[in-house]
Length: 203
Image (cartoon, rainbow, N blue to C red):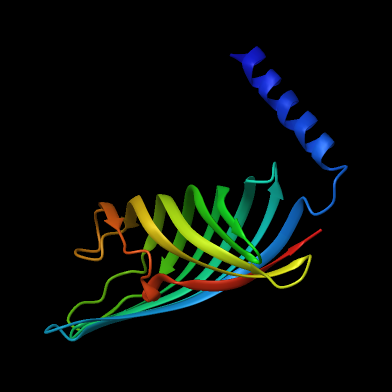
């Protein structure tokens, strides 16, 4: 196992060294997004604002790898409560560009995201301590880029599939035990509520 690991590392380093002789293999950038939701008949609402700086490396003409960080402000309000979270996340991912036409590129990102948050619940009927929320998620995003210049591109992406696991400590329901939640979702590719816009600069 150790030999296989060392050989894999060696291949990756050699590939990066060969590709580094070419230009425009690295990119930096980021994205931002806003989502708002309202549940009919319940009076419940939710809002979130996200900022995601990222750094990536193009292994080939089609494949890239990257690392994305995240800062998110999330709030949810119902008839009986108001909850506000500050979420920090990190997500390694792989990117495959399956369509290149003129200045338009269509790609898909797949990876894993880990996030943690400090909750500040304000329950009208009961007072519970602040929550600690940890979340892991496997995701697939669809996106596009518009190559406006040789190095600068505008980007947009949306989540189309994710499966995740959440641990809330202590439970928001009784303030004592932990709550564990499994979730999975399949979203339409043009879901504007999950859409993020950003930019990439290659060098």
